Amino acid sequence: MEPTAKALSRTYSDRVYPDPWEKVLDYRRVQEYAAEHPNAGRVRTGRALDLPAGRVRGWLKDVVPDPVRGINVAIDRGWLDPLPDSEMAAALLELLAHVLAGGSISVRNYVPAVTPGERISAEEIRDAFERVGVETRTRNSDTPERATEIVPTRDGTVLGRCLVAMGAPTGVKTSLDHLPAVVWEVPQSVRRSFARIYVRHRGLNYADKSTTRVQVERPSSFITELRELLDDVLDERVTTGDAGTGITISAAAARELGVE
Image (cartoon, rainbow, N blue to C red; front, side, top):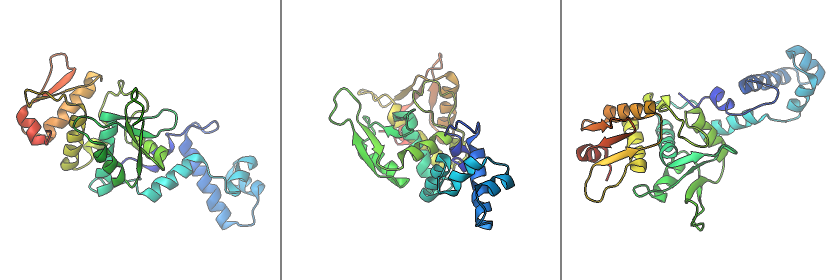
């Protein structure tokens, strides 16, 4: 299940390697060769592995490529290859829901940020980050013209890249045309939690009725898959508008989902 080391590595860009995963594999080959041949220098190692000596030199002197460094952090945090029915998979999926529905991932540095809403408190968002082992801080709370955001204090860029490997977009989300595939790989209880979080972020809160409507600027294919997700986890009535631009969740379905 995503995120995997390969998928995480491919969120990085490299001037030499079109596929950053190949850089990770070459780095590992150099480290393995050096461990077996501790007296071999950069030239001998490069010739043995068919790699430029100049590239090998840095790797033999403890220069760690960015994708490798990111993978190492993700391994230490327990984010890679989570079992679908594990606690970490559930925690990552729930954080993914917060980011997709109420947050974003920076194009510049991949740090995820989530904004509290009417139904979603800052404390709940902090708890979601803490479940994956990351502490947070509040950003823009004293800046009225900008939305208050909860962001990680450490390893945020690697966490954001892991979420991207799971299917989250960077920057604007209006072009996202499908739910991340990982949503369908976890147990139904986790999918239900994902749906609950999404609707609590995006559902309109009417003062005079319990019906909730999810209105998002997404391609119709995304709306269709979101409707399929809700149908999968709910027995009560959910409908899609004629134009396919939004989903109406009946009062009974909202109660079933736990949306107040």
